[in-house]
Image (tube, rainbow, N blue to C red):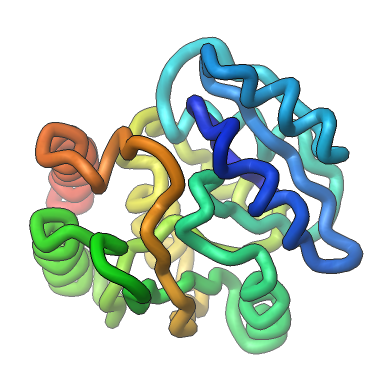
Length: 213
């Protein structure tokens, strides 16, 4: 299980103590200054360092460090529960990529500006790539070798969208399952702020522009 991490020391204990049996957490520290790496190691996670900032950069380092046939990606901010991952992995029996469709639980779990940006991007993706998705959420499961074979190049916030775009181009079966989405622990770097959401949408729109060519 790959956990991209930037200053998530407060959230990591909850996330790592809810690890399902048989799941190996890989915390990819993306330049934290709050001791996240030490907290992760103390809770039994393998810690990998990705010093160059970027969500895609962290995911790529985690994917390279993983050895299991099946890999999962999950935010390290306690907004998503690792105990929901086995349902996504089980769904790989009939799919090549399984995404967790976020269903907000609690006030502030998914700010309106972030939800709107996600919905617009999903509609554009569906129109251009022929998918039928309602969310581009960060919780997902796939086979490691297949993901590496996609040749993903985005190292910023466009990485999650590029994964879906390339998967669709390769004819993958893409499925969605509803998962609870909780208010994150600590300060948000992306969806909790307007500026972070704008940066993420900008990166993803750049990926979508490549689909149109």
